Amino acid sequence: MNLANVEMEKLVAAVVKEVLKSSGTSSPNAYGVFDCIVRAVEDASLAQKQLMTFSLEKRAEFITAMREAALAHAEFLAEMAVKETGMGRVADKIIKNRLAALKTPGTEDLKTEAYTGDRGLTIVEMAPFGVIGAITPVTNPAATIINNSIGMIAAGNSVVFCPHPSARDTSLKTVEILNKAIISRGGPQDILCTIKEPSLKAVQELMNHPKVNLLVATGGPDVVRAVLSSGKKAIGAGAGNPPVVVDETADIEKAAKDIVDGGTFDNNLPCIAEKSIIVVGSVADLLLANMQKHGAYLIQGTHLRDLEKLVLQEKIVEPGKSKYVPSKQYVGKDARYILEKIGIRAGEEIRGIVALVEAHHPFVMVELMMPILPLVQVKNIDEAIALAVKVEHGNRHTAIMHSKNVDHMTRFAKAIQTTIFVKNAPSYAGIGVGGEGFTTFTIAGPTGEGLTSARTFTRQRRCVLVDALSIV
Image 1 (spheres, rainbow, N blue to C red):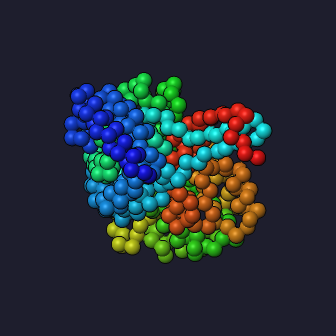
Image 2: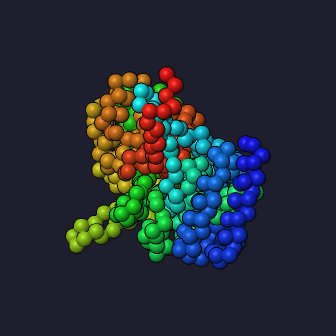
Image 3: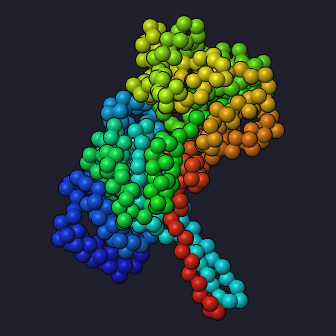
């Protein structure tokens, strides 16, 4: 960057800062936390315009500062999230926060396409939407905001976050930390914004604001349906119910350890985590024995019925019709804590619970988001694949398989059509923990974008120059 560009950026930054100040729309604490959505969006819109006056090189500096700040506060934010929400494990949330900081793609994800020929030059560039309205979950509050912020700003957007109310403090603190990092490198004051008191009303105001150009929802099916009905461009990262299939050719001891590791990671809060096990009967006993060896507690008989009563609630859908839903007070809780509630004292090595059940059992069909892994035995791979497809409910989110038979893996992948398909590893390898590739905590299955990154948050712009600049 030459000296003239540097001086121009300083001048623009000073001018916009004065505009923000004189307009009376500056955020109360200068770090993006607002009393109302309207003010947040207005400031985010001004900040986005300022962001676009900076070079791509300077934008990358902001991203670097955000990564450094997220890494420096990874442990603090993990502890804060567990304390505030009562969900998950601090050690695992630290891993997720660091993962978001290190493996979320930045400006390098933006690629320009060019076409040349007899009639000139055409380029297609990735341009920002403008202001993005982002709804974030209680399950991964800090990690999702870190991940979204890096990708969305790298793409040239500003963001207004509406976090889950039960993760309010952690979410607001994350936004504050990232904003401080951006400002420290001379960036816009309110490129990241949020609401002091998140609520359903705030979500509706965010969706309806005319200056919000793109909505991104990370959460359950209800919030995804809401953004898809908004009339705006929307990216929805909805629920999953990932099955793991184990066939007779698998390395059973490794499969058992991987399943326990993946299924108990952050107490099963990640939407990619193993939610049920479908195993060919001939290796079921061996798998179960090895799971117990690696930290799973086997529960059956009267204790299984006690567990069902504890973690499931029957919800009336309509007169004469009901369905089971998970009891919220046990979502993301430690396995030992859950076991204690039904009178079982387990050793410190216990991280998960494995239950032998039938295919139609609610533990199999309902996404519990608890370290409870139902295990279903089937006769062969054909039954395993058919049941796994049924269990996944067409979410097209994540599936896992342990097998050494390439034909089996191919058949399962084609049948289940999930966004992420992990083979012979814990589920979290699918987002870059112990596996290759970038990470994201916004996995857009319902709307088809898949694992989101900076390029996801752009729109294509085509520039055509006819009969010129062709040098061949």
